[in-house]
Length: 442
Image 1 (tube, rainbow, N blue to C red):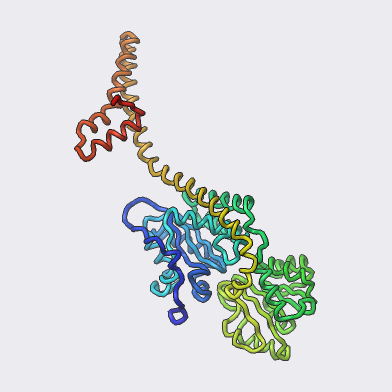
Image 2: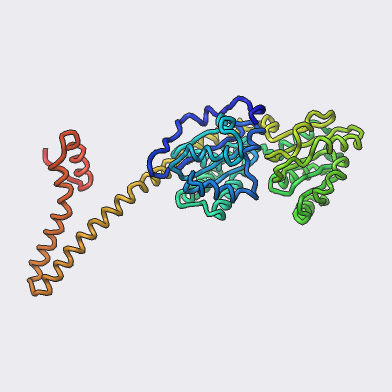
């Protein structure tokens, strides 16, 4: 990995120092890397597959690096949201889990404590941190990440509240702003690139490898151009057939790829495979059968489905998710006003959530205070009931009860004021006045 790393672009995300690990309190913390801070060959080495996500979450929480955790892993980002009192240990876990040297991973990682983590989650879900500004797919991916954490048993109270609020804010952004207007999606960008290679897609054969959400989006866009032939190849034939029926295509299994490749001009691939599906040798053989007619390939998978060496072949036009960045920027200028509106909604949501988090910090003290006063109340009530049982006058018992309770409740604050040093007396006086709403004459 070290030989392929490029200069990090994570300075924007590292604006805040990493929170200290000391102290028993758990804090909200997010860290990771994305298309702005790390190139594709780094992102694919730190991604998580659906099959291993549960084990990874349980490992992160099980080794004590975090109390709660959620992992968001897409083609453009790998981010971890957690509740932890050991942020450095949590960050170190990412490299350790993937068996990579920490020093090689470090330059690409951003760390977002507390308020910054909340704002980042809101911006990501709203599409403001995506390669395609305002794209809606990330919201579904984040919801899937939450479901995976729930299934793994690593979603606790704090993260549940965070994502509940995150999805609410994202909904407000998308319904109250034009952030998705004139959206140029990855799928539309792939079509545009193909039309630069071929005069007309109606004369081309299109092969889709995979049957997930990203392939479905691309299939719909390409099918709208009425290509000559559409084929869907997938590991499970049932899913391939379901998609093929929607786009008037036919389905094959991945085992038939070597036979199918040469008969298609446009290939769009996005699977969850951890190893490349299309190797250089396989593509070379297809080119020979095609008599070197051009082959247009879009690889939207992370890790990549196509070996990078395929790009070195003549007559092959290979594009990855990062290569689409220039195309998807088209039309974004028209949505910049919506970004400002969205940021206002997000900032308001952040303030509300941070206030809720801060209010939770006093809950243990409030509970202890209530328990303390309840013990005093029960003690005085027992004493009063015994006096009534002996036949004492109710008026005298009530008077004694109220006086005793008043003295007990006021003993602690008055004792603290009397014993206060000069340096702390004014602060205590101000606190007592605020708590009891006192107004003393000048």
